[in-house]
Image 1: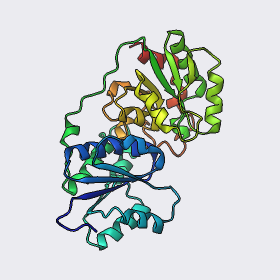
Image 2: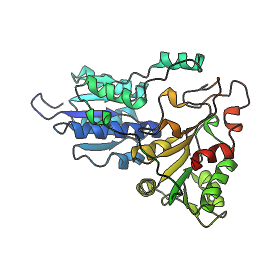
Image 3: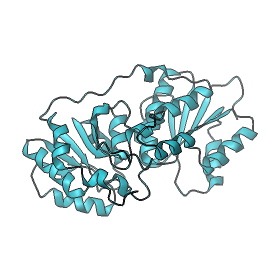
Image 4: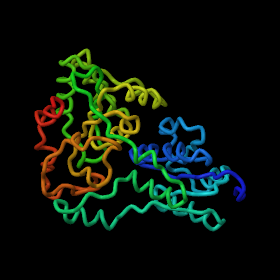
Length: 328
């Protein structure tokens, strides 16, 4: 471990999920810029390393999701951390931070607010909004003595009036409770294309890419985003997102990728809700497209089944409803 007189080496742990890592990238980059005398090291999935580029005092250690803990620990010890910020708070990160703690390294860990989440799901209509996840990351780093005042000065990302030159469409979500019917999002892509907007489609995995490839036949203005469907091309996808006027997505990782790059997002919400703390960083609250149902949210992450069995939060959300946000 580094001695007391050496430069601080702040090791930050967050191994998944992709959206949460994207949120963490905003905070850790800001913290690195606000604390130039310290060296920050982020340990996370290899795919998202491009999101952490920029500050000279921030480096990235790729960690495979199913990598044995002893190998991860051996790798992390090589960075000689003087502080450990556990931004994940799962069993794997608990083990790692405990080893460093027993070796005398100051440790701080993320408080997820599980009690508040349970109360939100029990009384969704009347519960107050939860602390945004990015602020929970900020609080974790502050416990180690590293503040991020620049985040407090950030302004809401503004969506410029249309018609737009380039728009992204990210129609997929991991869970049923966050997935709007694909044909409706396909129609949104078609309507934007007819307005003269160049529509880039975003997705991951062979099945999603195959579906999106079919959409490209609807109009010459609809195409796969550069890097989509190509191995190890996340750099190209991020570059594509950074050039958009707007991203239209589900409550998904792509919302957070765009947010991390300062791109405005129109996001479609179903079982989840922005007040659970996972809204896009700096996004305008008016950009959340959702129905005012008393049963929402019924899930923090979108997993599980609909309480009513109808998924009316998504099924009753029409193309016209979403297009009204586009027109506004």
